[in-house]
Image (cartoon, rainbow, N blue to C red):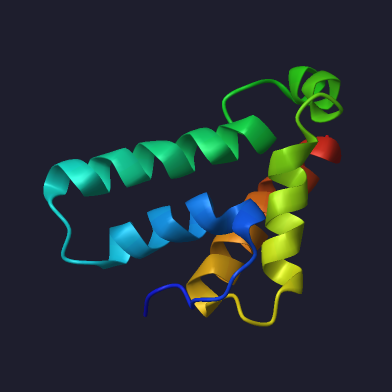
Amino acid sequence: MAAKTGAQPGFAPVLAALATMQSNALRSEKGQAHEFLEQFQKSVHLGESCSTHLAKSASQPEAWTTTHAILQNSDSAIEARLFAATTLKGKVKCDSK
């Protein structure tokens, strides 16, 4: 299932990347979408120590805000909501250490 249309523009890039991953796009396009999603998640919590993450959280609120907005938007596809929930789960696990 692809991302639903009519989503807020603030998280349109995330939804577009998720849609690309689920489409019949070229392997190179899927690779770019995967890289984008991976970097988006890293901007929230992955690939760094929790203390580094906590220091960066205030300077990178857009990723945190974006995942929250995806979850709050009833028009978001279930796949987008799952991605956002998984991303936030990683942040919570990191913050609780």
